Image 1: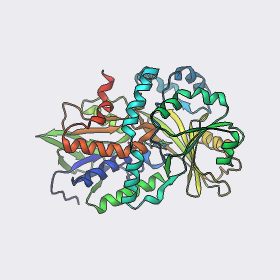
Image 2 (image 1 turned 30 degrees about the vertical axis):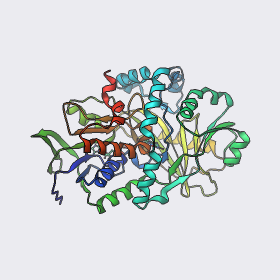
Image 3 (image 1 turned 120 degrees about the vertical axis):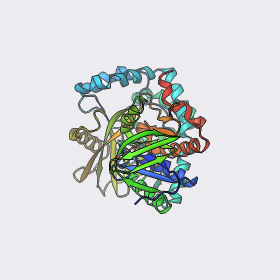
Image 4 (image 1 turned 60 degrees about the vertical axis):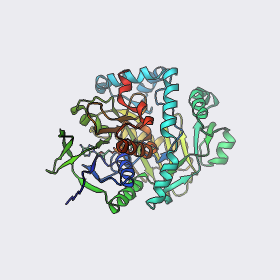
Length: 418
Ligand SMILES: Cc1cc2nc3c(=O)[nH]c(=O)nc-3n(C[C@H](O)[C@H](O)[C@H](O)COP(=O)(O)OP(=O)(O)OC[C@H]3O[C@@H](n4cnc5c(N)ncnc54)[C@H](O)[C@@H]3O)c2cc1C
């Protein structure tokens, strides 16, 4: 039974973004009601690669992406897949994606993302300490590996922009790669080592411990699906499928990819699409890696998670509810076997998650002008774990001051109508 004295802030969606919003709002003394149709943290936030990549400020669509795309689309093992029957549906989004992939736009995006993501590691560290989950935080950096020096040179814009915005990174040769990661196969001969990046040993465990902390600190949770949000007097009336009706001054919609449908019913069109990603989680006690290894040719992250190894990656444009394509997970397992000598891919689990993605890789966070008190926070794409703490902090700041925090202004959907 939910018993709320004051009007709560209602949060629709308890993925990592909703949980971080709830965390900062409770810290600020607000009543909070979290709503999720599933168990918190079991959406896209369940199976990501755990990287807290504060300096991954460059977008997915870099200049030249259209030259690479056709080759990737006809190769069944490539990290990119757009099924023919989904092309038409994805076309408006893809149009914006291509428009954003110019040198000028990418440089601008890097600046916006650097300002938005600044301090993410520090914020997560402080949350992890407070909720008793600091043991999940791992340090050792990220190693980005390339097959050849030439392929590394092909990514020079990415590395230039990242280092201009403060990423500490150094170029390493084959011998240095092996010194860092002895299990690395002879497929890779060049790399970039970023010593300061961290990751989580279990991103779902982070969500669970955040939820427990929130419930112990007065946050309410209702396991139900949103039925309707309507303007009511000077606030909002939120109806849930189990019949519960709650009134609020502020409602945050952070329902991952579903945010698009919810906001569309309220008159705001978000250019949001699911880029479905997969992971394969293996138990291979004889193979040890010391940090996240990013396989540049596979666009996949290989992460040490406790006594297991997870490979996560793939960009599959598809309806979120369409059944997972096991072949894509199988390719990831094979990529892992090709990257680490001796790794056992027999004992593994597979998972698919819907990344909520905007065309320019900048999250979609804001409040429609005609709907004060209604907030959307989605589009975190490949960086939702990393960005969630700052999203929660800045949305809370916005609600307290009743105006969008200045750092969030470039993240509003209005950028697409400019
Ligand atoms: C393979 C892979 C690897 C990744 N690796 C990383 C990484 O290393 N680092 C990183 O920073 N990011 C990573 N990401 C991205 C990150 O996981 C996502 O950006 C992030 O989880 C999105 O969080 P969210 O809270 O917006 O969405 P979700 O976690 O999907 O949460 C949305 C919640 O809303 C609920 N919901 C939806 N509709 C309704 C409704 N109508 N009523 C009630 N509830 C509803 C859902 O049940 C769900 O729990 C990765 C993603 C993938 C797929």
